[in-house]
Length: 397
Image (tube, rainbow, N blue to C red; front, side, top):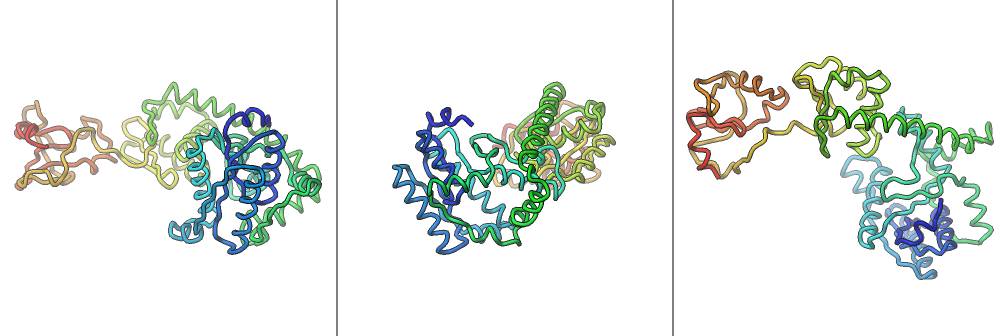
């Protein structure tokens, strides 16, 4: 990677004090870069963690660099949220790095992930079952995050540190095989390297091939969405079920995985079950059906449309706060047998028929607030007033 492009700008270096980040620090210094050193103390190894921080702090002082640090009880934070220690550490670490980046108005954050790290990531992804994105592993650039060492093997890093007598710290927890990454690092990969000494170089070539194919499919998906997406927002996407059905099975799967990555900013947690259930739902195209798509999102099918969203949205309109509703009125939701007279119309109609005529998806109907009198007469459904109560419209706050 051409460091000169970045060295002319302000950059943050995530520096743990371990061999990889110390190697990257000295490579940057050699190129004339003056990064802000950002150290996140996970608070997991007592005095060891403090000594890691002290080394990075001393390096910053030695080379006249700005030093930023943060200490958190990662174990407690992760347990409270019922997530793994590794995931909790990663979330908090990247939140800290982003805050440091914003504070110093830096253009990028450098991390010292190297070739062996990426091989570990891809093998772990394969082990749990992954898709195109998982076969790529970490990318050289992902937003503000820059990983310039992804083609550098660990062996070369350690040799450089030794020849230049650069100090670094070793994390004793990396020897604990109860962590899956450590098992791959200490057991699986050494065995693979013994069988195939060219494993790392072969991985580089294979990854480039996968990346090329992934980028091609991504462009194809983006082009399809541009032509067929009926609605696009941060947490919402709608498209025609019939247009989706015309795609090949492989293109359907990739499109859904592409949307998953867009919504979650990762394909972590994406399973074949989610893809199969979403595809089956869309292919059947029954109105009012939905399936979970990851932890937060759902796939809905309504009147020939497919919608990916966090939850059904309420009908559009301006709503008064519940405590501002006059005492003789109350809010409830749809009940079987409800009837009302939509404003501008003669005669009443069943609320179910009104929803059908208005093409309001079944999945949304029980979410729409209904304003009624104490005698259970409907005043308004969503933002549509009953003709008999339309004069109330201007009296509500």
